[in-house]
Structures are given as structure tokens and as C-alpha cells.
Image 1 (cartoon, helix red, strand yellow):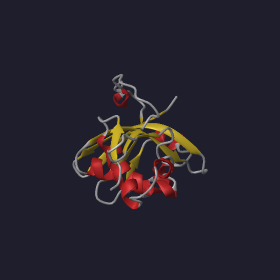
Image 2 (image 1 turned 120 degrees about the vertical axis):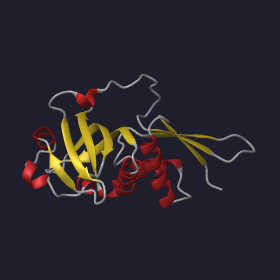
Image 3 (image 1 turned 135 degrees about the horizontal axis):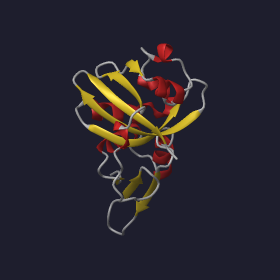
Image 4 (image 1 turned 180 degrees about the vertical axis):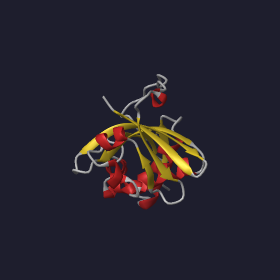
Length: 176
């Protein structure tokens, strides 16, 4: 029987969904294998195993590498916040702000119409699909991710996403 998995922060169900997706791909994966599968999207992820005699294993998956119980500030409504709108059915970008295009080192016109998976590493697509499904179902996502810019360089960002009718509104802020 595979280990039980607890995700932290537990207030991020989209992260939990992403972990489930990656874990389902290789049910017998070790903690190190699972961590390697998550790291392309969640660069600070850390997994710790608890082994108690007579119990099945238990993995604690920390999105931010450690537990931080402080509430997050609501930065996403600030003026000039980088944002995109994503079609909730297809995952294609329908609108891109100039601030997001600048973060991604791209031209706003060339970014519209591309799929959200174009901006994650290929090995992060399962985890990214888990995030997309969580917000697609009407959830709000507050998480941190690693995206890939147009020039191929990585960028770590905070993300706030919510579904609004047929679109997903996604706000981004560079991680310090």
C-alpha cells in the first residue's frame, strides 16, 4: 500500500491536486521521486517521510519547503498587477497584460492564444494540469509556481487564480 500524503499548506487545495496527479503517475515512487516530479513547477517543494513501526508510510509535502502559518497578503488587486485571462475549457490565453508580457519576456500579441502549458517545463505538465483542474472547477488558487519565459529562462512567481464565468483570471507577482 502506498504512503499517505499530506500537503502543506492545507489551505491550497490546488497544490494538493497537483501532488495527487504527480503521485498517481508513479504510485510506487519514493519521496525523492515525488519531489523530483513536483520541483519543475514548485521549485521550493520539500517532502519529509514519517515512518512509525506498524504503520504505512506518511509523506508530508511542503509547497514552500517549510511550514509558514502567516496569512498571505492580498496583493492581486493592486494596480498594474501582471495578469492573464485563460479560457476555462481549453486552457488557452485569451488576454495578456503588458506587465505579464514583460515578466515573460514576450510580446503580448504573440502570447495570446497560447496554452498555459506552454509556460511550464514539460515534466511539470501533470502538476500544472492539477492546478488548472482545481480552478476550472470553481476554486480559488493561491500558490507559487515556476514558469518558463519566452527566452527559456525560469521565473518563480506567486499566483492567484479564480474562475469568472467561462474564463480563469490569473494574477502574478514575482517571488522575492
